[in-house]
Length: 198
Image 1 (tube, rainbow, N blue to C red):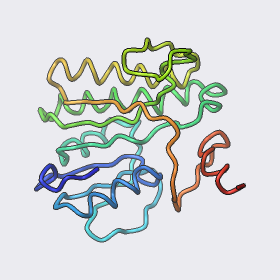
Image 2 (cartoon, helix red, strand yellow):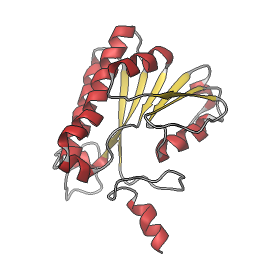
Image 3 (cartoon, rainbow, N blue to C red):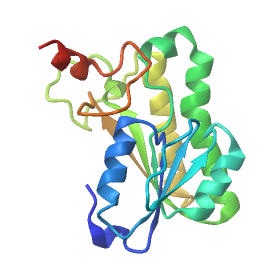
């Protein structure tokens, strides 16, 4: 994932830093000369060679600080549960769409154009019979979770077109692997759970 030359003298922020993906990215970045800023609402264990910021990414001031310090932002924070998005759509909207809106506003205010990598979901394609699924497939969200992720993607796309930031969305499927962090959502981490039962 991390090519040392791409991160030379860069500050890389990772939101959702207590999660599995973030931990993997931090490990990879430790092999580069990047300065690492880990952002989480939770208290984080210190990691030598990284800075931590305890903050809520649904708040604008948080993004002012992140954007002012960062060249590259891995935005991984937000709701990860389809079920929670169904049961509490306001939470889903606040945790998925609002942070990207605040990020865009902060980038404009700071007159700084960070590279933003956003963790979206493959489920924005909805249920499809066309396999394999490719980026040419139509996006047809069928849940609040999918819809909010797609809206955040479109925000990033619009901001990129206007030169506010340089964004890309990764439509992730089932992310799995060894991790010290455990999801509190019952519908997450299914492959890890199946592996443990084998």
